[in-house]
Image 1: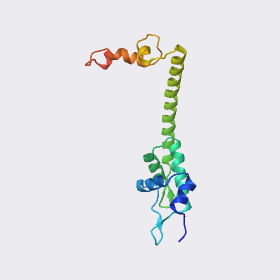
Image 2: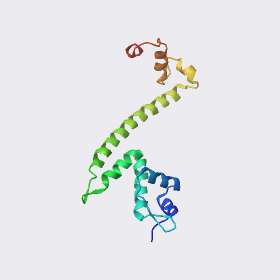
Image 3: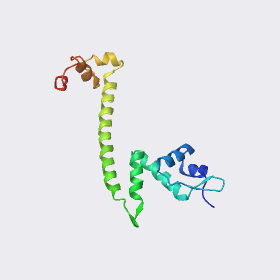
Image 4: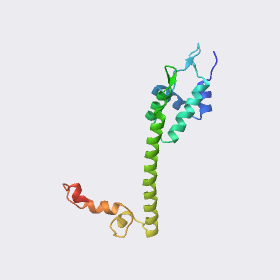
Length: 153
């Protein structure tokens, strides 16, 4: 029986053994063959799948989303059913672009806080010239507990 042992697969894919076992338990990896002594033997394809999983995570996909993508890409009736990748990648791109916009706002606000010389969060929160968003939130907190959302705006 030939194949790669757990340590070899983990090293080749750049993951640790716990990650390899976790992905097996999650069903992201196929159950490996075993030697007569019970040692796991993996195919080279396992290394590829592990690399794909890690790359997808770096692109922002969760493990649940990766599992769905892997399932969509498996062969069924001799045909690949990976058409869902286009839609999922488009959705992820929209999500990432929204995060970029948020991060740009955060970066701009932090630059403004640095330019304004904000040094103390509590003091800054009470200042009308503070550029940080919590100034507005601090004023909303002064309203009574039962105030409506419209009153808080």
